[in-house]
Image (tube, rainbow, N blue to C red; front, top):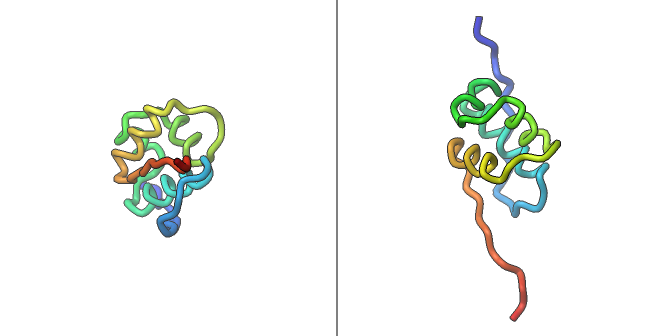
Length: 85
């Protein structure tokens, strides 16, 4: 029997200031597609525990895993510098 995935609203685009913000975007994007956490982890090629850590902003996760999850789920990250010349 297939489980129903509760959908979380995708927040408005905003600067990435902390792990919690990223976790909200990852969870919302995953649930918007109807994927459960196990399906999304398999789709992204990461462990379920890694996906849980990203979504909950708990524990340490390799940057390469975060970038892979974002790429596979279609989440874009933008970087820039705030250093004044």
